[in-house]
Image (cartoon, rainbow, N blue to C red; front, side, top):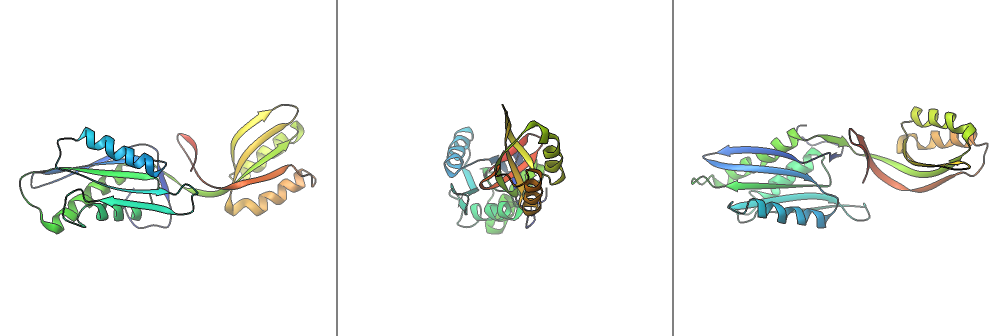
Length: 223
């Protein structure tokens, strides 16, 4: 994926890397999925230990706050001239739409100074390469519900969920079936009306909370 400014948001499915070289300096980017600021800070320390012999390990991260109401962004130039590493890296990350992610760019100095503009280009290019190589899943907004149904309605319910791209989180089977489902925001009103019709007005649908989620090759991720 290209690191262009976009309205959509994404999460990483796995770690991605990128490299850029200029005048014998090597810039190695590690783009890593994280779920919290603490996890990002831990990832920074791990990469510093891995690349202990490098001159600089600059970083930027973008994570949702614990209550998911805002984005937390931090960056560091790690000894490079102010504004030449961490902030450009953060700009690429924000512009790509990737969230809950840490990127660390390790620089091995090649003996030649690159200047302010050269550093900005190099650190940005390394992150762009990692973004380009990343496997991403789009973040969607939805509502988490808990519902109960008898076995006679199970087939009709499955059809409705598929029709409106709702996602089954988990199910329990006993005397009746208990399900937790995520309904995309854009389908919420219509699906709720059809569920009410299906259940003949019985109160078996309980709203739990608003969620961000993604569905990809590795299954469901709730953010």
